[in-house]
Length: 248
Image (cartoon, rainbow, N blue to C red; front, side, top):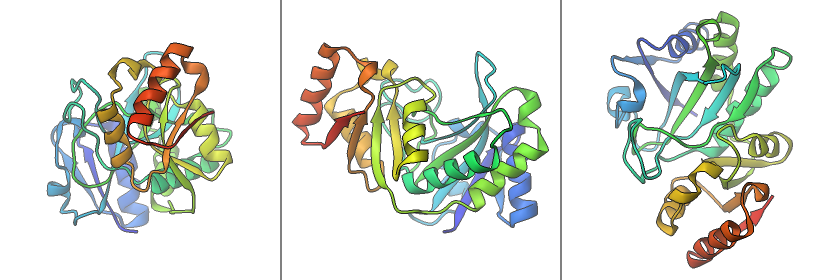
């Protein structure tokens, strides 16, 4: 599968990963002057064909400075302070995303990083499938050449291994439960709403998550994230659109 790569020219981690994509794997990467999360329709500068996947290597910031290697879809719920459009998701190729995640988990083993999906939380908006692949969470990690290479390799060697595809609801911003399921079972996740997004969930935004996760079969919900009233509310919303779902 061919992909297009764009990155922020002042983004250390994005530049690091993109360097190795170009040098070692002959994958062209297009630098952007502004931060990619604010650059809607990146397919235009990347010269991507309709449906062609766009990868954005980037740096991830954590208040706790957690050493992390992450993968996530792009999109917003009811706010868009970090680019994109409100209540709009970008298409997500969940199988390819899982392939990247599995590769990172393999190549970064014993390096002291948390390998994880992140919940959907920022732009840009695109009409193409789009995936963020990020290094966190300080300058030391962003410019680490070993990490830059392994992330580039993980992107380049990704594969669409057969898997069931779901959206996720619940958990923290780092989606530990869904990451564990993806690594240990044949399940791939597209858009994920952390438990903190509960108040933002409506039947329409659930439909947006589902429709923008290519091949989605339904929703998996982390049961411990919600009380009984919240669970009943989720059930009503999901039932109103006849979505398949189960608690995990």
